[in-house]
Amino acid sequence: MSQATNQSWGGRFSEPTDAFVERFTASVNFDQRLARQDIQGSIAHATMLARVGVLTDDERDAIINGLSEIKGEIERGEFEWSVPLEDVHMNIEARLTDKIGITGKKLHTGRSRNDQVATDIRLFMRDAIDVIEAELVRLREGMTELADREADTIMPGFTHLQTAQPVTFGHHLLAWQEMIARDHERLLDCRKRINVMPLGAAALAGTTYPIDRHVTAELLGFERPAENSLDAVSDRDFAIEFTSFASILLMHLSRMSEELVLWTSAQFDFIDLPDRFCTGSSIMPQKKNPDVPELVRGKTGRVYGHLMSLLTLMKSQPLAYNKDNQEDKEPLFDAVDTVHDCLKAFADMVPAIEPKKANMFEAARKGFSTATDLADYLVRKGVAFRDAHEIVGQSVAYGLKAEKDLSEMTLDELKQFSATIEQDVFEVLTLEGSVAARNHIGGTAPDQVRAAAQRAREALAAVKGEAQ
Image (cartoon, rainbow, N blue to C red; front, side):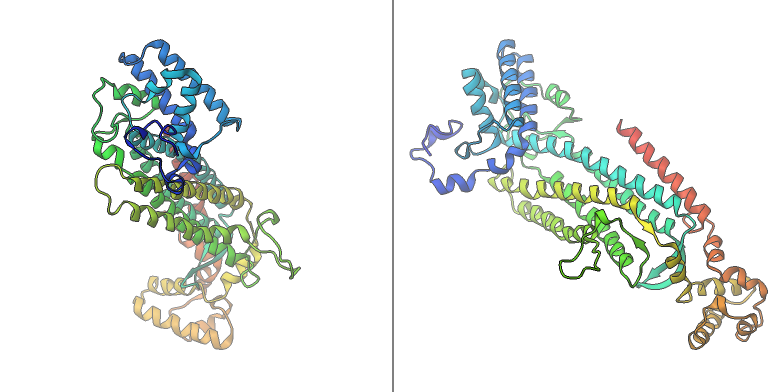
């Protein structure tokens, strides 16, 4: 490139940058995604400069009008991006200067690309989080409503993927909701630390111009200006924190995906997913593949990689800004897109799950899922728990040989293991009796599931109310 190509720094150089290095160091191919936030920050910066007397009102108006026109060009796809101008900031500034003349060059007074890009990314992430949160809310609402509808639907609960105790499908769905609720909290907490303004830190030490950072922060909706200029331009904790949130969220979605994949298999056959969330096979006409949950499960590793990329990017950087930080955007942008799309898919899909209630119920009858209920029954009759455990173990061993579930045995068959067992034992050996007996907060009893669903609605309404 020629020395005149990028006048923001070319004056010190005696030869043009190598063409390969020009392409290698440019970021405009991906950071142009920050154009809207870059213009937003520049308008606020120009407004502040006019308030403190660094710009005249006419200069401010010319800059703001020019930037507004450029924003329109970008939105209409008319803007010509230039690699020699390196990044989104210099492309916009050069176009502004073309449009309004030397006044365009005054926009950069009192700031650096270091604090400019740090501000742009925070503005971008704040916007992205608000969009992602809306999908999280939709997913939580969908889970809660489906859980309420399926509060009485009995299914086997598993540990080690072995039948453990009967639960309700509604209770299982609310377990998912609890996971996503924690993710929601983490996202909102992350947003608080994002909402701090670096602008005014300039390159690393602040500026000699009489800027008012509180004015700029207020114009941009930031809670406050960053306290330390060195940290302001070099901090990427917020990007790491977001990808950490994203990794935990995708881990949860992946666990849910695994269950959905299992449940749709012929071996489980617990649920049906609508055709619009599945695909077929090019060779096996009978196949209906749960591609959406499988793909979400696969994308989890992608997001984990972005977290490791950002942690590694920052681990050896001295203060303050370093060119390394140019590498923060692509993993961050992709993490944002991946999280949004996975959440959208789940928010659309989960409320459309159709449980196969008869299959779930029949599966819960297998595997002696009420064995613990029999042990609890014996304890209530005065048998020590360890003795009760032994009695039930013997009953299960008998049932395996006789191919009978506990609820299918006669009273005489059960009494051979303990004379304490009476006719009322069958009240606890039924699946309905088992789930109904767990009638406490956090339990799987249908009444508790409905109450928990209502609490979840109220908690979500409170979060939405705080955001308004």
